Amino acid sequence: MKIEGETIKQIANKSFQAVFRTTTETPGFIHLVFRKKELTPYEFRSIMIDLKKELSKLSVSKFNKKLSYHWLVRFDQQVTTPFHVDNAADQSILMLGYEPSAIKSELHIADYYTYANKAFEAPEDYFNNFSPVFKDNEDVLLPFISKLKLVNMNNYFILIINNSSPKPDVDTLGVFHKALIINKDLNKSRIVNSMVLNVVQKDQVTEDEQRENSFLNTNLISK
Image 1: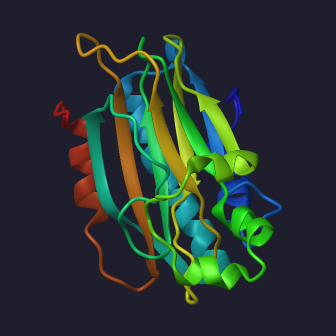
Image 2: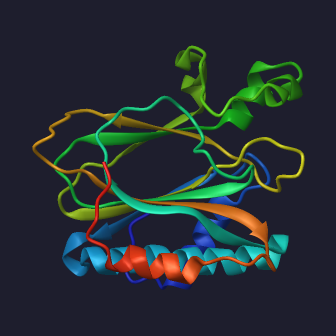
């Protein structure tokens, strides 16, 4: 989805419908594209925080639960990963903000719920033995994979992904994700701003504001 004049609330509403899914009729993720010439890195991180706040309001409205940071970091990453869900609460959301980079890469999303429903006579057999890292032959996931290209020196990208595991007390359906680095070059940077957002009770005490201020103003980049 190219962002051309939409407000944060409009973006959040579309994102919530796609990501906070309760059926497999929606994808469980959304890909947002922002033009580089309109943003600074600081403004880009501000958009991510504003989106988190709006998504949290929508989550409270529908599920009576808010979003709180599990982690909030910036890192320079050129590592291909297997399909996985990130380590977080059973119900969580992953927001990845990619800064312009010459490193060619892709993010692959695999709908493990649709896979379980199609490949297993009893999908619960898969869910009951769910692993946060997919260890079988990835070829079985091919019909259920979406591939997103992330290389472009002219754009910033935000990926919002349902990072939840299939547990009985989880309201929404998660997906796997996988980073694929196509042309690794350690002389160049591939900066990713990463938020993992736990879905928690709305009255839970958090320190989100302090963490947001550090994230907005930092120049630190983890390896």
